[in-house]
Image (cartoon, rainbow, N blue to C red; front, side, top):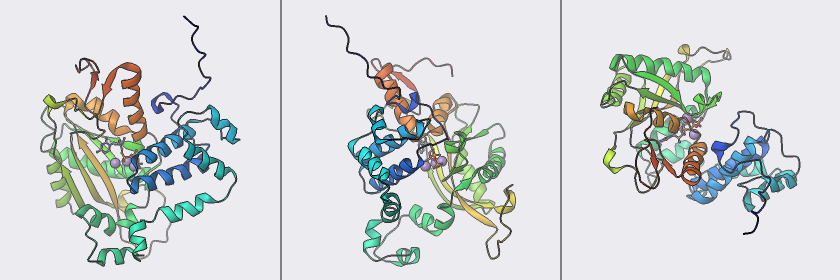
Length: 333
Ligand code: CTP
Ligand code: MN
Ligand code: MN
Ligand code: MN
């Protein structure tokens, strides 16, 4: 037989889980632009292009230097024609970035109907918002402002205190971006670890109840577990898991946050609203849930893709399965 084709000299893996993950982004000018485009594609329901832009941004973030010339893109995986074109245009510094971020971040539909402010949107009878959107709008200013690490730590104290009252043997761990070392996030994610199987049942409703009685709960959307061991792995390997979880908006008192602030705070209320996600998996699924909820979303997606394509396994937030037999891997995690 003929000799094997030479391997392409690409040192950057097409799998995010095989690349360096860093907070030190040398290509922020490009990745900001690609992420604005990804967000816009997501809002307009174009999942495919959205993922392509996110992939391209993720590859650029993993590089340990800035791209110096568009030629260098030749050696990088996951850069589609659109992403390459965007990067080239950015090179020509046409200020596309500023233009696009102002034009695209606005909801096109509402904007074209002449609605320019939140008040107009909220008072327009033809727009029916669901409860989550209403809560989101009511606290829009707070929720669109990034959450600092100091605020995340203060929120952790609040959640730990509540969890202790509901189940003293339960433990709380920050997940999401803050667990990955980010200094800011759009919310604070927590996973709750209960030592005995079954203790996760009823935990979140009790926590929500406690927050409500403390007068710090602004919004709660509880999703009870849809976990059914017999049905796993599901046919469609979705990223959505079946654990008990809730989406909250919680008041955080400024006095509870240990951080330096500007003195000039006249007229501001003494709390801010923060988005909080809680998940309470059964203990035997904890490791997989922690991995999945730590993210990033693209890292998780590529970890699953890597498991499937390179290792013959199916991975999700619940377990790792052998692809051929669908048997659960005997994990002692
Ligand atoms: N996640 C999940 N199932 C959900 C919601 C979230 O598995 N129903 C996972 C996401 O895939 C992600 C992690 O939980 O890996 C955190 O999600 P999110 O808070 O949206 O993102 P962060 O990475 O924390 O980024 P940010 O700082 O913007 O919050
Ligand atoms: Mn988060
Ligand atoms: Mn996010
Ligand atoms: Mn979250």
